[in-house]
Image 1 (cartoon, rainbow, N blue to C red):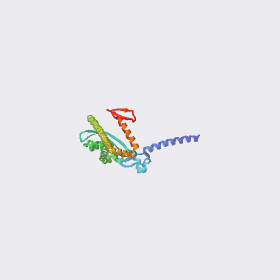
Image 2 (image 1 turned 30 degrees about the vertical axis):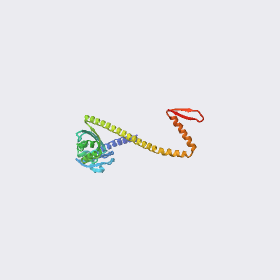
Image 3 (image 1 turned 90 degrees about the vertical axis):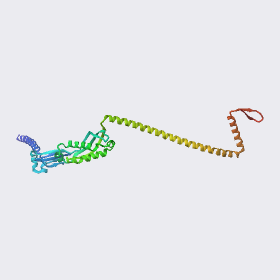
Length: 290
């Protein structure tokens, strides 16, 4: 009986002792579990004494010595997340050189590189960074020509990034990719006018293309007619020579020549517009009367 009582009491004391040990450990922060992309910045009596950026389980007393036991009472551990953040600023007002009000949308990404500067150099570093990017957009893109705003986005994005990088580094940020994603007109009347001009220009281009096509077709037809007339002229020029050669060959055979000329005479007679009178006699003859 005493054995079972001892087991129960031992189990109870073990449970309570474990609970108390865990509570005391948490109160004195004897260990911490650090997630990925997270940094802990420790201060002691208002001064920064170090930071821990290795993810996993760690023991502050091994990093800072016995004074780590006093951190819960006279110090503080600041948690800083360091993954890549992305932001998009919409409709930043910019005026072109022609006086057109434009809305610029810029996308950028950043991450915390210096947690100490992020915590203590600026009370609102994220808001200040966005304001700095918006200011750089207005500064770099104002009074530029409209075609430059619409076409040279890569170069303008690099200028904005170069403008913001030094200040963002002072606040603990590392500014990554920066890109102007949208440049839009803000004046409705100007949009309608541009649409009208674009439609008229498209009509002019279409008409010019149609006229150019018709001109090309006309040139092709004229060239074809020219070549055809040249060929016909050449054929008419060589026709008497070819026929003369053929008749000369036929004259070498008198029987064939007489038959051919008789046939040609009959064909010419039949094609004549006059009347044809056939008379019967000893020798058939053909008489023509008009």
